[in-house]
Amino acid sequence: MGCAANWGTWQRKRRSLSFQCSPDSPLYEPARLAASAWSTAIGRPVTVTPDGVYPLLISDHPSCWDGVARSRGCSRLTDDPDDGYIAVLTTTEPSDYYGVILHEMGHHLRGLMKPEHLDDPDALMHGQRSTETITPADVRFVCENFDCGASP
Ligand SMILES: [Zn+2]
Image (tube, rainbow, N blue to C red; front, side, top):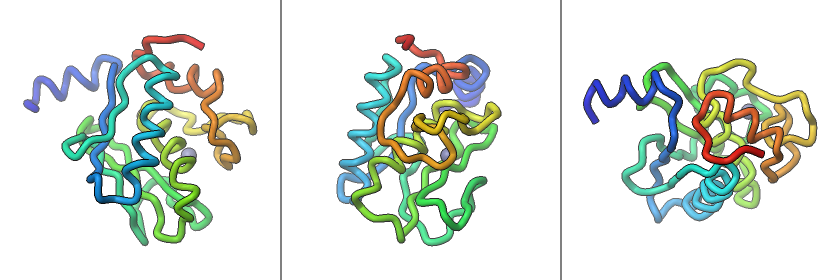
């Protein structure tokens, strides 16, 4: 992807998002399911493939902006549209991979816009996520900064 394409992608609201993960990774299947859930919710392609843009990693010490000790995962986002990743901590239970990735994908869909979380405790994008469901409030939240094809 060239500079002009990068610039255009970020200056206009994005209409698709891709994540990079090998089919050999334990994150692959939960990530595919999470991407599918977001695709359905926002009406745009969210994909997980071996050649996607944002890597999905399992890491001990992710240097993420919200990498606090109690987190099960975090997202790195920068003003470079091709720079960023999702890291799932090594201590995260595999049964929680889906929920963690679903939440972190929401951060990438919303991009660098503040605030980073919703106050609604029932929302996926609440800071202390307890759900694995994308609510209408979550869709409105990410679609403030993403060109969604569906409205809740
Ligand atoms: Zn979060």
